[in-house]
Image (cartoon, rainbow, N blue to C red; front, side, top):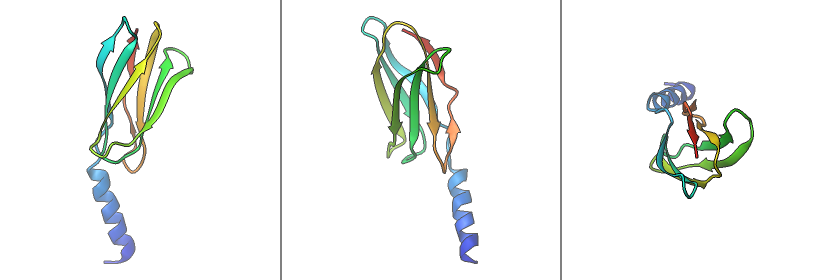
Length: 104
């Protein structure tokens, strides 16, 4: 087997093992503005996490995550309002979460 073929097979098997990134709200306290998210992705893969004001492009929080076990938690303190949280997983396992609309 040629080197290029072996490389393609390794990449194909790595992509077959990819999981979609998922995003959930673990905890939300409307009195303090605290919200805790759990982001699950492929172990060691970089994920970009953003919170924007709902209906706008105004980013109120943004971070890059890289969990060795595939699970990250993000804690933010937000003012009252409506928001949209999203996560994007980079290659080799690229994929978007559906995002979460939520209010504080």
